[in-house]
Image 1 (cartoon, rainbow, N blue to C red):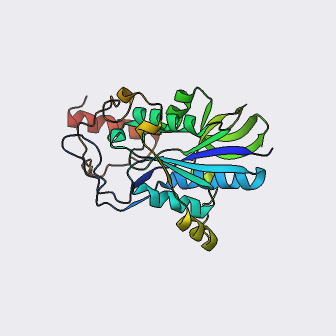
Image 2 (tube, one colour):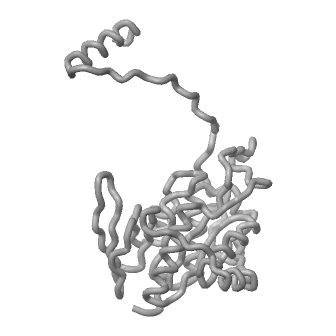
Image 3 (cartoon, one colour):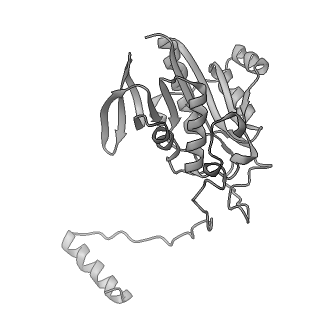
Length: 264
């Protein structure tokens, strides 16, 4: 199988746990905060490169964000990706997962014929795991989440192992398809010296809202029905108690404590 066209969706995320929220827009304040490639997306990039090495073809990295994301895209190129595209426009600012999925899907439509889309299972700043499946729904193609292994990839079809609690499922479907991957799938490589030199020379393609066939009511804050009301750190709970003894003794002890606490 030659000429496989793979798109890997990548997000740049804050390299910190000190997340601050804009008081008016309720979105993350990213200015002045060190950023990295979302760790789960690094596994997606690596898997795309490995597939290209086995089957030939092309790997394009797609991201949405401010101009600073170019540095993360260059890092992906240094790893071995062929091309990178950044969707960057103030009109995209404040996008929730719905608006982000829609915008990225329109970016993929503009790229053209794509066989496989790979995403990390989730982003560490949002932890929703919604964008990957959302892109697939926008494109009306199948999607498989939590993929730990691409077992077979042939003309028009793919078979993968999908992690579930206590084991895994074997899932097969047709191409094009979107998969989201977990860290068990591979070990991301470090950029090579040759790759770093190539990334330094390569220009990153930037598409704005005007370059995409997007509905202005479906992008940015306008197209984002999700609203963050409050962000807070949960209070540390006091340590609990583990009851010992036979089951009947534990039940009696638990009931006694609940009665004394006024719960029962």
